[in-house]
Image 1 (cartoon, rainbow, N blue to C red):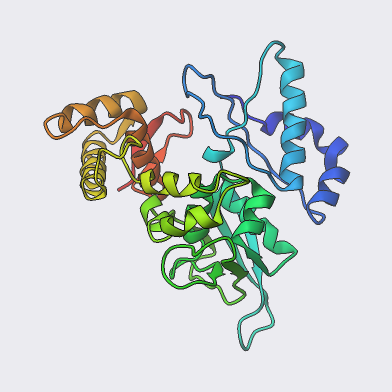
Image 2: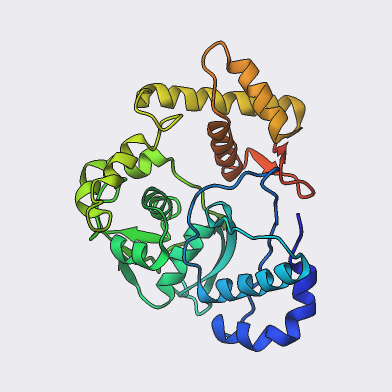
Length: 306
């Protein structure tokens, strides 16, 4: 992986004015990992619309990279990124000091939250149009920002799911946490889409594609994306797989991705054979919940967090 940091130091004077104007007078620190397809296969997911300041910083990196390494092509994977953003909130009662939290979120969540810098309330449709985040992922990331423990946004409808395009999301000025640095966990795809799949056909999509989101939602939780595995079986397999991953990592302490997939497959082969993509998703979920972490020197190596 090649990092942006060294190049950023060289460019800081030339780009300071542009970054200040784009981000309210403060710089944007962007770190890019450049991975080859042979080591980390790309996903066919269109990049979302990034905040102006972040997009400008990435454009500068791309210009530098393609000038330095001729004959190469960069394909941004915004669906797998992460971000840290600072939330400045009104003072608590009896205090004059503004509250501050540093939120550790996904790139999708960053794109959503930045929209609330200029508006206090937005509908699902407005957020979709301004971010271009895929429908199921958009719902999942929004619901994750509305959970009782991390209610950074307030959802207009009742229940776990999102009722439709007109469902509103409002900036929660009363959000609080005991921690200054807050890692926002992701809910499962089933929690985000299960209660709203019936209305998705009427509310989502463009033109004649209104039924596509409903079909996608009904398959979202399945192991292989087919309708042959019932949701209850899928849930059992997900718990079995996560338990196996934690058990293996607790014993080994550190393991690379391919070895972990091979060992998990060997241990679970008597029950079912998990597709590599399913294993990868469960690993990412365990990282988000801080059971595992990626090695700083090699992103394909995982460490067990006691």
